[in-house]
Image (cartoon, rainbow, N blue to C red; front, side):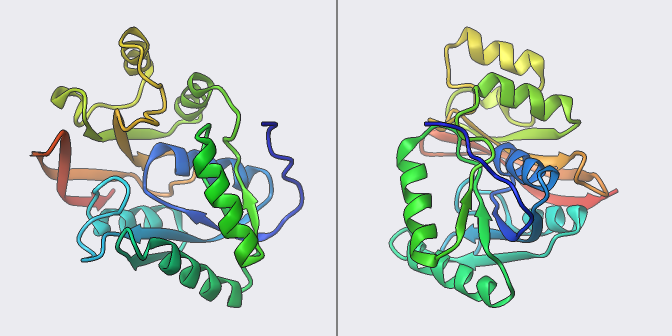
Length: 224
């Protein structure tokens, strides 16, 4: 599939998990002239964890404060996810939102979902990372000055808390893993970067093993 042709300014939301891909997508959209008015973050049904990466919701709110963009957090079960997502976007449309930014890279089923949902909602899908090489995206992320920590992995407990850098990329390549972690090899939490006005400092965290996955459960963090 060809890369997106994204021109013209519009008021949009950014689908937000707190990780590297959504952050880089938001950064690129901002650089391309989009007015990112809201971050939209989906939580588990009980509201205790971020739906995609298992991060505590207060950390996503810290990110929103750090970048200066309001965040909308929505509780949803897997079964009710699509309905809740649509309801949230409909509410944002009332506030003038015309499009949504998504950090998908190469999973076709994800893009199909995004395009279907956006078509139903009559908003524009914006996919700034789509079709780009995964290593190039990671290097762009690092070179732009972003800092992200591994907060979930099903590969190696020792990865928890690691910074995404060139040595981490090299290790992924040696293990022949998808560099963006598209198969769940790892997930990240961004703590600093060019769109951040303040850095997030992790004060307390512990490693938690649930099923096949290890998580860095950050229980205390603050803005510098």
